[in-house]
Image 1 (cartoon, rainbow, N blue to C red):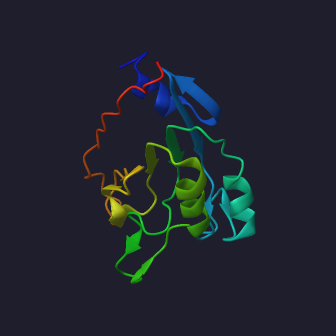
Image 2: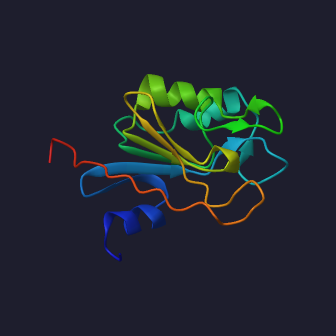
Length: 144
C-alpha cells in the first residue's frame, strides 16, 4: 500500500493536497463535544472554519458528520451533525466523497446524488473496533 493513493490520503492533513489528480483536504474541527480538542461552538465560529475549505475538492475528510448524514444518536434521540458543514458541503464544495467518523452509531454509507458520505467509524458505540473498513472506488476525474 505505500505509495498508493489510499496511503497518501491517510497520512495527508491540512492544506489542499492533490494526488493522482484527486484533490482532497482534511480538518479536525467539530462542534463542541465534551471538551475534546478542535471543538468550536456551533454557528458562526464553525462556519468561518468551513469557509476556509477551498472549492474544487474531490474528497473532504472531517472528524464529524454534516447534519442528517449518518449522524443519528439513538440514545439521545437526535441528529448531532453540523448544519454549517452540511450547507458548506451541499451548496458550495460538492465533493465526490465526504469521509468522517465520530458518531459511531452512524457507521455506513449514504449519498445525496452529488456526494457520497462515509461514516468510517471503526469502533462501535461501545468503543469496540468491530466495524470493517469501508472501501469506495472513486473513478479518476475526467480531466486527467
